[in-house]
Image (cartoon, rainbow, N blue to C red; front, side, top):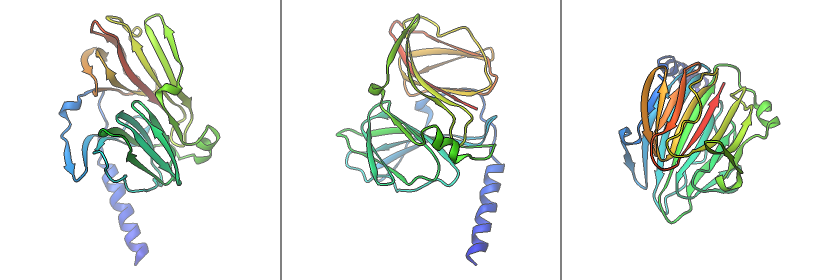
Length: 256
């Protein structure tokens, strides 16, 4: 009987994923995401669908109140995650070991690891969770060989000046789900562009930390500020610029 229920669950899961639609390139605004409160936390559903390299991709944001219970410990059988701290201080527990991440800290979590997240600061903790599964077979050993699960705080990265601002590299490596997953933080000086419009095989997300930007995606201009993000599908032609009189900072991460 247990096996029958398991098979039914698997068929239902496959059916749900089969109905997912491709995520279109464009901009997603923080203020458009409805916040739903449940006890000591809020959640915001942001997107769910498929992309060129992924047969499942979702993104949500969670806010834990001060003193909130940690998220329920669990392991993902065949899902990889990126967690990005927007505000507050987070304790990440993985297989019984704790690490502290502050604002703009990043957790790159390989599948099959028991984990939970907890607010250990004196202000609310808000973080993004990006969950994804590759269209190609999962390769756990590939992730292990490239460092496995990573936890990185911004102040542990090195700021390297550029001709238009600066950059902090977080990682550039293969993972269980990605042949390449690259992540960095860019700072642009006032009223400058990052580079000429270009395209690449990787799908990319640019997540705004501060400031105001405009992005051309396939000939259409979009704008974003802190908390918003741009989504560019594989081979989309795109280019970003700072539109304000102050520096702007954003995460950029891409995968294939």
